[in-house]
Structures are given as structure tokens and as C-alpha cells.
Image (cartoon, rainbow, N blue to C red; front, side, top):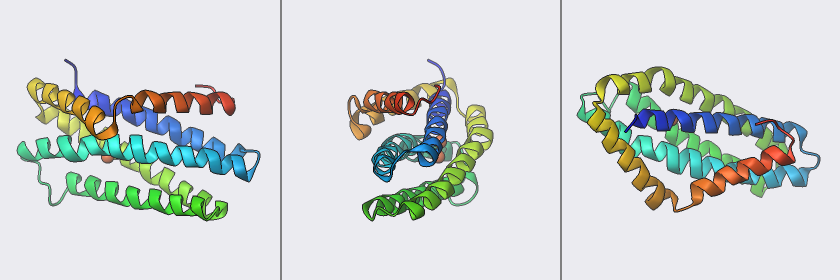
Length: 180
Ligand SMILES: [Fe+2]
Ligand SMILES: [Fe+2]
């Protein structure tokens, strides 16, 4: 059935490409109004796809499965990554407040910090968490996780939301003439 970790690796690629697009929006949007509009959509992506969908799969399924395999949850890699998910949520909330206040200077600063923070988080998972998971999980564990992720996408994220988000990213690519 494949590997559940590959699903998460693929989502990392999507998140990284959106961070690149968001950098471009921050630097090349022609007016404050346009910047606010797209940043609002980027925040929707970050809270729905990155947090609810992706971090949700890690928090609710991958980490508990690894704990059952003997990886400690109170210190070490799982504790660090779970804490970073919480920090990321707070950072997105700060950016949401910047948008409400139309404070683009603060938004740019917060986005820059968030972008570096998330890139480091994903790097850590790609290089430490996923290799560890692939070593500890048997094929049947990976199969079970894939099923859990499908249920998570339908019940927690919502039916059709994933496709809607991919369409939104395509629109950004066209409107900002960014090569996919
Ligand atoms: Fe994560
Ligand atoms: Fe991740």
C-alpha cells in the first residue's frame, strides 16, 4: 500500500512551495490591499492544510504509533516536534491579528520568522522523524496509518477541502506569474 511517511513527505513539499509563493507575494504584491487579500488566503492554507491536516496527522496518529513502538513522548524528538506545532499555531494567530489590524510591517516580520521556523521543523522531520519511523514501523503499521490519514482528511479537514486548496495555490501561481 506504500508508506504513510511518504504522504507526509509529499505534504512537506506542498508546504515548502507555498512558503516560497508567500515570500513572492510579500515582496511583489502591487498594493497593500492585494497583499492583505493573498496573505489572508495563505493563512487559510497554513491553518487548514499545514496545521489541521498535516500536523493533525502527526499529532493524532504518527506520534502515538511511535510511542507504542517505544519512542518516549515526554522528551526527545516527539516532545520537541509537538511543542513546535503549538508554537506554529501561535505564530499563525499573531499573523491573523496583524491582518485584522492591517499592520503589514508586523505581518512581514512575523511571516519571515514563521517561514524560517517551519522550514527548520520540516527539515528535522525529513531527516530525523521519518527515517526513525520507517525503521520502526512495519508495513502493516504504515497501512493502518494511511487509512487513518484518509479518515482524518474526510472527517477533520472536510470533504473536498484538499482539492479546493490545490486550486487556490494554482490561482496564486497564475496571478503572480510564478512557475510551478
Ligand atoms: Fe510536524
Ligand atoms: Fe510534518
